[in-house]
Length: 101
Image (cartoon, rainbow, N blue to C red; front, side):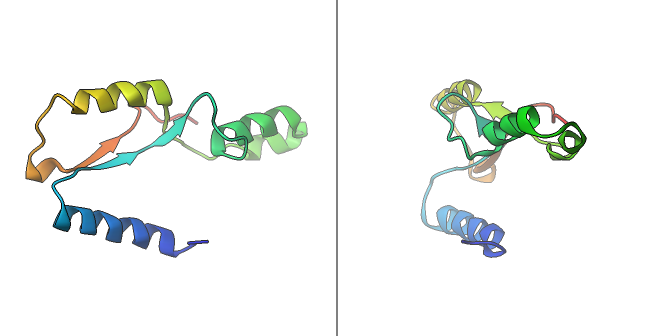
């Protein structure tokens, strides 16, 4: 398990990609959709909301999340096929326009 090293591993991987390739880095928000494993965030919270006792339900969902449906992500990725990306734009955050709570 990566634990505290997880953010560092992501940062180092991005730096390696930027240094040795002409690729781009896409930072994705919380992706959800059909076929998602049951132990991932959205199915877990939905299941917990419907099965938790009333008093526990208020502590289930994190304060704010930015979720993006897989179909929306596919549309966004397809648009990248038709655009030129400059060297200064090689790190791109892909997220929904609004957080949910």
